[in-house]
Length: 88
Image (cartoon, rainbow, N blue to C red; front, top):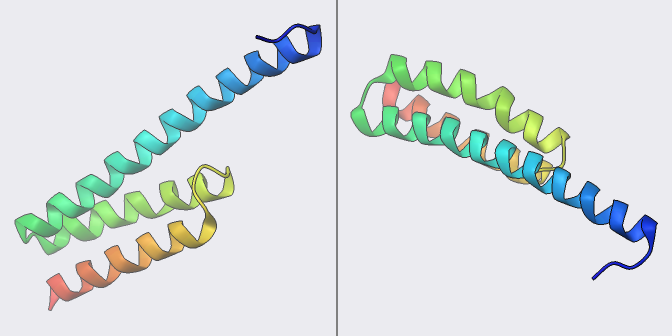
């Protein structure tokens, strides 16, 4: 358990940051799920719209440090290629 005042404050800050990051990560997962569901349904237009909504969310999560930048880029790339394949 934290004893000093600064350590107690640090634990409060960490708890707040963890809650924010958890919410951001959950939000990103939701956007990715919508894209994958649209791909599974076979609706190219819906999948494209869902991808355009998910892309900035993933980039924002990367810029905030919730996910690694390369991870966000990889997920966007793989989703985009799947959506593109669906359109053909």
